[in-house]
Image 1 (tube, rainbow, N blue to C red):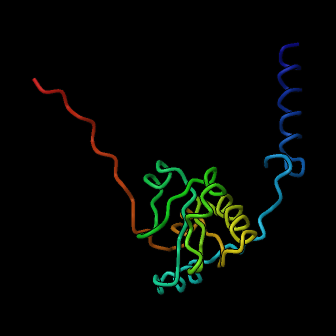
Image 2: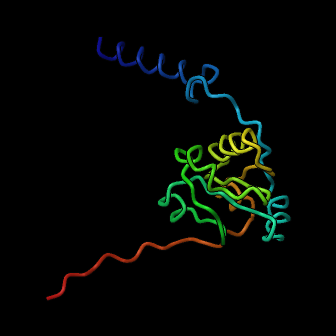
Length: 146
């Protein structure tokens, strides 16, 4: 009987996960932002004077996956209340791990009048052959002094 209950729960969970949007947060619309290729991003990054990279990841994500050489760090949850501080004289690329949060950030920025080239995932960029400039290595654990 226990096996039957466990199997029923597992089947129900699998069916729920396969429903449209089952893995996504309810009510969230897909991003309208262009997901940039490595080549598109590298072309934009070749003109740093006209580009602003906004990384919406947490610091621990930047330290483990890596990041770009110069960026403005604003976590996704803080972006909307930070709009007044973001320069409007540059084209913006938003960054997250796989462009999900970056896409939503790009949508928010575009809706508020910013010029947005698109979104990119740092992890996706590196997997596709792009070179991340920053990867912070955790220091080794401290050893006890005798």
